[in-house]
Image (cartoon, rainbow, N blue to C red; front, side):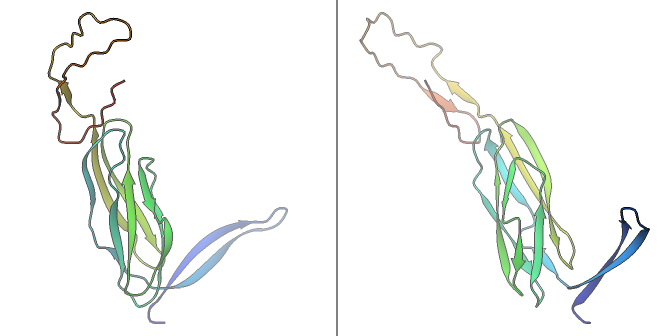
Length: 171
C-alpha cells in the first residue's frame, strides 16, 4: 500500500534438542521521512571541566504519519534528550544536546538517529575543550612581616588571555 514500507530479515532459529532452520520475518511499517533542521552542532571553544551551554536541534517529520525514532550516541561527553520517541505528522521535535569534558580535547563525532521506516540521520557534533590561559600580573606578592591574628590586603591583577571564560578558585 502507498505510504507503507516493508522490511524483511532472515533469522536463524535453533531449537534445543530440535531442528535448526531459517525463519523469514516480514514487517510492514509506515514510511517516514525526517530531516534535521540544523545541520551541525558546534559548541565552539569551551573551558575544560565546565558544562557547555545546551544547544537545541530539531528533527522535522515531513510525512503525514507519525515517525518513531531512537538516538544512538556512544560518547560519554555528550548528553542528548530525548533518546527515543515519536514525531507527529508535519511537526518538529526539539532535542537538547549537552557537552562536558574534564580533559582538553578537539572533539568531533556524529550522533545517529534511526527513523523507523525511513533513512538514518546523522548529525555532526564539534567542540574544542581547552584550559584557559590565566596570568597573574604581579611577579610576586610580599606580605612582609605580619603577626599572628593580623590581616593584610594586597592588590593582585589577574588576566584571562584566552577566548573562553575561566573559573578561578583561590584557596
